[in-house]
Image 1 (spheres, rainbow, N blue to C red):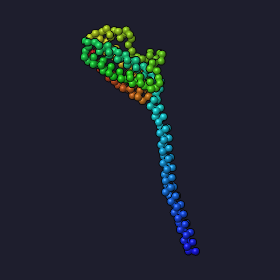
Image 2 (spheres, helix red, strand yellow):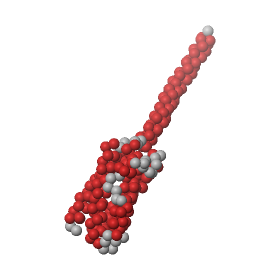
Image 3 (cartoon, rainbow, N blue to C red):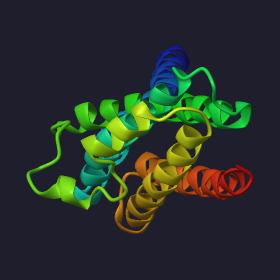
Length: 211
């Protein structure tokens, strides 16, 4: 009886230990794996949700952004053209020639930046019909021909007068973008244009007075 009882007790203890072994480590491990799986799944889901939102936010733009880029590109191109006309002249005052170089150096890269935005937005690089009328400060072909023909101090004065009007038009367009635009980069550039070109307007007015 004692031997049988001992055997039964031993078997019961062994079974209990085995059950405890399966239950504790395995249960803990299983619980850990389950929580880990939930964490990873939650992270993956969060990433999948955040990524499109971030992408959409990065490319979000509105009609004001599109119009700003479409109009400012040709506006900048004309400023570069006017600067090139001046930089080809041999008898310009040094400070006026320097200003023309600065305008070209600043606006050339901005043209490339705005062109890349339009491509990224899937928008045409050309403004819709009628929008070009809103590009204030643009010179006519006759104005450019007159600038090209002028020499010396006459050319310097004409360039400054034309570029002041040109800059004032750009500032007006840029301020509209600062108010109505949605794309953060486009709005930031519009504010930079206002700051840079208002400073250049002041500089050009001072140069004009000294000629």
